Image (cartoon, rainbow, N blue to C red):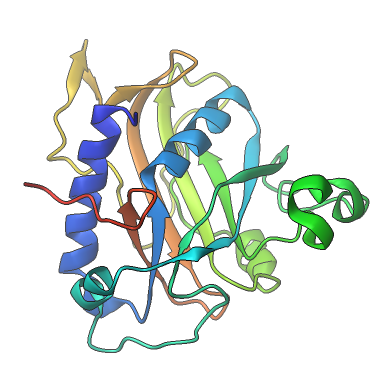
Length: 234
C-alpha cells in the first residue's frame, strides 16, 4: 500500500496536470507505487543522486478515458518511444554526483539486468534521476544526457531534513512542478512544515517532478495505479 500522504500529493499533482494540459504536447503515465520505490531508493542512497531506468509496460496501454481527459489542444502522437503505454517497474541503475550519475558503465550493458531483461540489459527507454535538496530543473549535463534517450527524461527533486551535506538549493530559474502542492495537509515540527516521512526517518518537506523530451519541451506526467487509473480528488 502506498503511503496516504503520497496518494494525496498525487491527487493534487494530477489536478495540476489536468489544469495545465494545453501546455504539453504529450502525456506519460507513471504508477505511484513506482514513485514510492524510487523515493525509498533516493533516501537509502544519500548523499548521492541516483539514476533509474524504466521501460513502458507493453501489456498496459494508457486507458482511453485518461488519454481523452489529459489530451491538450496541441497533443501529438509518436513523440517518443513507449508513448501510449504505462511505465513499467523501475530499476536502480547508477548512483553518484551530478557529473557521474548519468553514466552507465559499458560493462553493465552486457551484464546488468541480463537475466530479467535479456539483450537490452541496462538500456532503458525512459530515465529518471534525483536532485537531493535541489529543484527538479534540468542542468546542462541533464540536457546533454537527454539526447541519448529514446523516451522521456524525468527529474525528481526532494527537499528534506536533516539536510546533511546538501542544504536546500533554490537559486535557479525555471518552471516548477510541485508534487506536493501547498494544499496538501502539512504536519508541523517547530516552524518547518513537512508532508511525509522517508523510510530512513528523514522528513520530506517538498517534492517536485518533471518530465521532458530531448528537444526541450515538457511532457505532462499523470500519476496512476499500476493499471493506469488516475488518482484524482474525490
